[in-house]
Every structure is written in C-alpha cells, then in structure tokens.
Length: 212
Length: 212
Image (cartoon, rainbow over the protein chains, first blue to last red):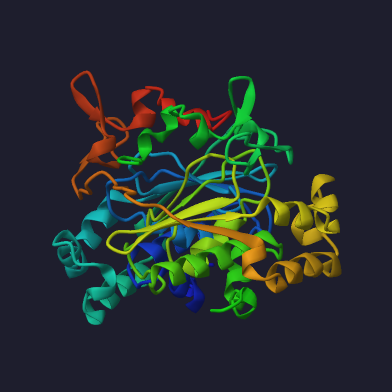
C-alpha cells in the first residue's frame, strides 16, 4: 500500500458501523497501515490487540470501528480496548511481530475540522441526518489525502501487554441461579454470588454514570 | 421473528468477527431479540446502548461481536460497554423505548458446553484451527435451538444510563504537542499535558495488566 487511496473500507464496514462519517475510514486506514507496518494479515482469532487512545465524552471515537474492521482485533474477541487518553491514536501490538502507534496528525485534525460535517455534529445533528454531499466531502478528504500528511507512525520498543490467564471455570450464583465465570464470583454469607446480587460496588463502574 | 432460526448472521458478520464459532451467532440472536422486544430497528447512530455482562479472562466474549452486528450498538460509537460481571448476558437500553436484559440459559450453556468445539478450545486451539465440521455442529445447534430454550428475557423498569456530556474541546499537550480531548488533559507545572506525558497512573488502567 503506497498511498492510502487504495485502502477503501469494504461496503460491509459501513453497514456494520451504521452511518457514513469520516472517522470510521480514518480508523480503517490506521488499521491497514498498522498491519502493513508489522508485516501481518488481518487477525482471525487472538493474534494482536488494538489499544485505542480514545475515551468517552468526546467525538471521533468512530475511528475504533474502522480499526476493528481492518485489523480483525474486535472488542468481542477482547482484542480492542480503550486507554482513555482522549487522543485520536491507537497502538497495535502483535506478540512476536512488534508494536506500532499511529496518531492522526494535529495539522490534519485542524484541516479536517473545518469540514461542514463537523459544524452539523457540533449542533448535535446525528451523522445519518447530515446531507450526504456534506458527509461525502469529508469522507473523500480522508480517503484522498496522502498517508504521510495524515498519520504519525512510530514503533514502540519493549511494549508488553497481557490479559489475565483465561479460564472456563464457572459457578452458579447462589441467589439468582445464573452462571458466573468464576473470576467474577463474589462471596456473601460464605456463598458464591454474582456482582449484581452481591450489592458490592465496583470501582470500575465509575465509567458508567447513572447505572441503577 | 417467531423462532430464532430465521435470524442467521449476514455473511459479513463472520468476516468482521474473523472466525466461525457458536458465540458470535448467540450474540447476534440476542441482539435481534432485543430489537424485537423493544420494537426498534438496528441503530444507525447513537439511539441505544448494549451493556454486556461479559468480562475478561474467560471465553465466550465473541457474543459481543454478534450483538454489535445485530443492534448497530458498536464499541466505536461508544454504544457497547462491558459491565464485567462474567455472565453470558446483555442489557439493551434505548431511551424512550425501554430496557431488556437477555441471559443465555444455564441449561443451554450446559448443553452447548458438551460440544466438541469446546474441548478444542479448552486445549487452547484457536477457533480458526478447529475442524470445520466440529465448529459447524456447534453453530447449527445455536441457530436451530428454539429461542425460549436458549434465552431468558426480562424487562428492566426504571433503568437509567447516560454518558458524560460530550464536548469537541481539545488542547495540545505541552510536552508531546499532540491534541487531547480536554476532559483527558492533566496538569503538570501548571501546563496541560496528556496522560502518558503526565506520568500519572490512572486507576482505571488496572484492567490492563503489564502495560508499560
């Protein structure tokens, strides 16, 4: 892939994502470039992970859907995770192949930000309600700008990432009777219970506001 | 949709997911049932969220990819999140339309667990390396078992969920010069910096073991 012009997301990528917008293809390009940099194919199973630097409470996270489509590092396979740094960047890490970080250049963020598409978004208009010609102009800009004007690409040496060791072990919650993968079982009155039945508050839940 | 037999994932769902397995279609069925229960179409933009009760360090999370495909509630749009309860269940919440929780019945988990597919998985064989006839037997079982034998479906009343208010505001990190969405900017020596440059440890990072 010499320029990113050849790397247009497949039609089903748009169907998966649900709407047309410029950031899904940005993520797709980042994914394709990442694979090329590490000399690898799209991942079928669990051979690589994408650590997105995006967070919540800001736009442009659509990038992550494009990255999943390109790399095969899907959230469902636990191969995509957010680092919550609030940056339009990701790290692609493939054990034995290396680690690459790709950042959407600040200059390109400024340039793209002038597109009328974002004026609509700032007024709260949903992407699928924005006039098609407005959206397509932003999409074409993404797909037609030379790669080196868009992305900063860097190798990360000595990068390590691992998940907790997986286990099939499960137990039944003594209250609701549902199965729990054992690492998430809690104990109340000496009996195994699931987190909702336990009533214990998990600090990790602070990312989810207003849960009941 | 009377039975789930009609609801076979589209071909691109398998392409997105990367391999064939029984849990992607389970999530797809859960998603289709959820949409039907709330009387809604697949989400184009941000009209609903899926809160998966899956966690990490256990199998069967592939369910989440199928749920994204069916509902349009994708991780990239911030419309899919994990609750980390370690259960094969999800909550589909659509403001104004209601909330439904779907759990894969314990009896069906036991029944499906006897499939040879899982004997391979427990030996650490990746799904794409499992003989096709073994995988397809498990997939057919998922697609051909009547819905009410597979799923427990319940409405959750008075369920509330909201994200922090979104903002386009961003600042440049005074050290690396990269843009940060402002809510993630930190302060060092009175200047805005990004989280990696700040050196501050985020407690949320405890889900990511071994990061450097």
